[in-house]
Length: 75
Image 1: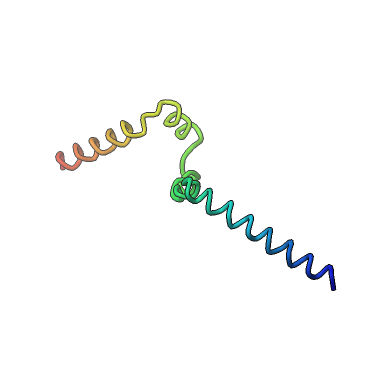
Image 2: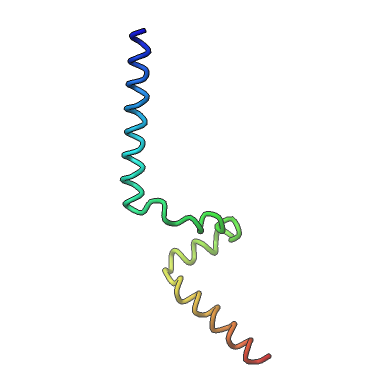
């Protein structure tokens, strides 16, 4: 019967540790980016690396937006 108390104590303390770790990392922003892993599979590895290396994510998005505006005006 003593081992039962020990196992309950261990499981509750382990659950409390996991809860504290989860709260700490949630406050640091670990779980905020939930969209990019889902769309990462749609891109080739080279496209992602080029954007990350250049750091021109905003410029690439602006170019895409400008091209779309030009196409809309020409139609």
